Length: 162
Ligand SMILES: CC(C)(COP(=O)(O)OP(=O)(O)OC[C@H]1O[C@@H](n2cnc3c(N)ncnc32)[C@H](O)[C@@H]1OP(=O)(O)O)[C@@H](O)C(=O)NCCC(=O)NCCS
Image 1 (cartoon, helix red, strand yellow):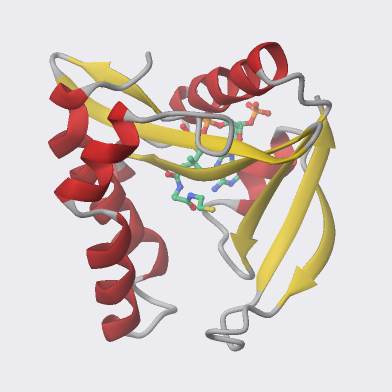
Image 2 (tube, rainbow, N blue to C red; image 1 turned 90 degrees about the horizontal axis):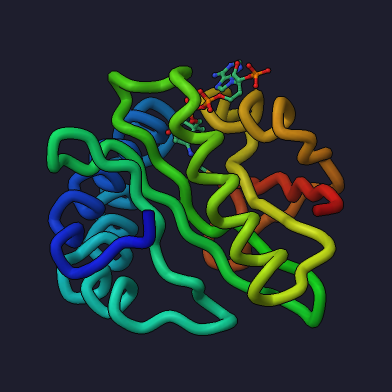
C-alpha cells in the first residue's frame, strides 16, 4: 500500500536495519552512518511520504499486524524511464515474495501514472542480497558506474522494459 504519515517510523526502522544488514560487512561504518542520517531520518521520510510527484512517487509499504516489514519507492528519471530508488525488507522476512509485491507496486505506478516503458535500478557491486533479486525480476546488467563522491563503492546499473 501507499505509505502515509503513520508509517514514517516503520519505514525508517526497516531502511536502517536493512542498510546495516546489506552493507555492514562491506562498507565503512562512518559511511553507513552518514547515509543513514542523511536519507533515513524522520523529517526526510515524513516529507517523502507526504509529497509525491513524478520525480519521487512516494513510499510503498508492506504492513503486517500494524508493523512495516518492507518499504520501496521510485521515480521517473527521463520521459519514459522510471527508476527504483530504494527497496528494503525486514532481514528476517526475505524470500517470501514481499520484495516482489513492492517492486510490482512501484512498477505499476511508473507504468500507469507516468507512462514509463523502461525501468532502471542501481545496486552496489557485490551486493548478493540485491543482485539475484533484480536478476530474478528480469533486470539485466547494463554497465558499472563509480560514483564521484565515493569511487570505491562501484554501482551496477540494471534495466528492463516494463
Ligand atoms: C532485495 C530484496 C528487497 C528482495 O525482497 P524479497 O522479499 O526477499 O524477494 P522475493 O521473495 O520477492 O524474491 C523474488 C525472487 O528473487 C529471488 N531472490 C531474492 N533474493 C535472492 C537471493 N539473495 N539469492 C537468490 N535469489 C534471490 C527469489 O528466489 C525469487 O525468485 P523467483 O521469483 O524466481 O521465485 C530483499 O532481499 C532485501 O531487502 N535485501 C537487502 C536489501 C537490498 O539489497 N536492497 C537493494 C538495495 S539496491
